[in-house]
Length: 145
Image 1 (tube, rainbow, N blue to C red):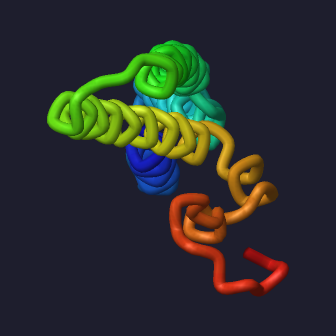
Image 2: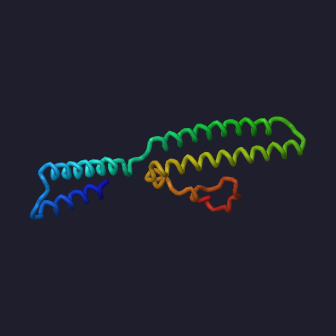
């Protein structure tokens, strides 16, 4: 759009400087096309850099799903703790819990990525995902763990 406006403006300048300049109506039409092209380019570029609210909606939706997964995992872990099972049953249930917790982590990471697309400064202020300590790794005794 912007290039079209510039091209029409340059064409108008070149045609206007010739011995036999185009008629006033032709010059007016070219000027109108240039103005419309420049206005269109301005409108197109005005939304550049503005975050899409749909990304925030999607991130919040992911967080609600993650909360539901976390509640389900809590109930399942409480049941595993409170009710005796055979080692085989316990092993199977722990495998299921592991898979569900993996889905939970994926939803949270996807929500963070949505926010990173929507508002990268907010994610940058809170730190990198790699900087979050893994609570399942054994502690080294370092107070920063």
